[in-house]
Length: 116
Image (cartoon, rainbow, N blue to C red; front, side, top):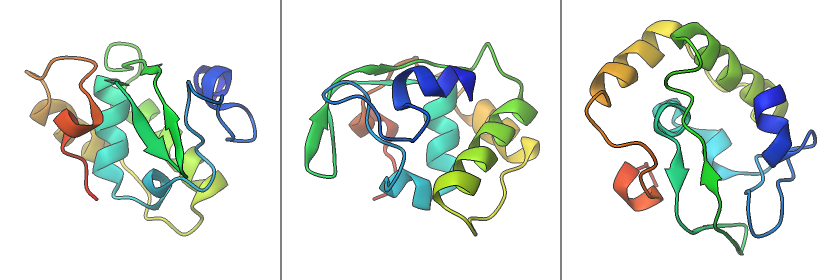
């Protein structure tokens, strides 16, 4: 969580205009594939959350964290802000890592084609 807290804050509230909140975020409700893609590829560009626009850069953790570590991060996020969400496994992360192997880092939210 040390990597996440700097931008999303310990309470999950984010930083106005730059980093969206994790608390009460629709992303915490799933599907987990979306969160895995975001952690692997990062993201840039403006996004709207809870009526506010954020325009920062989410770093990619593709080269810094293992599949198991990314699963652990998401499971910790779920434990904090989406209790009851199905757990994420390293195998799930590996599948998305393989699927996104040729994608450019830092796509926009639209480029990621995240679930609505």
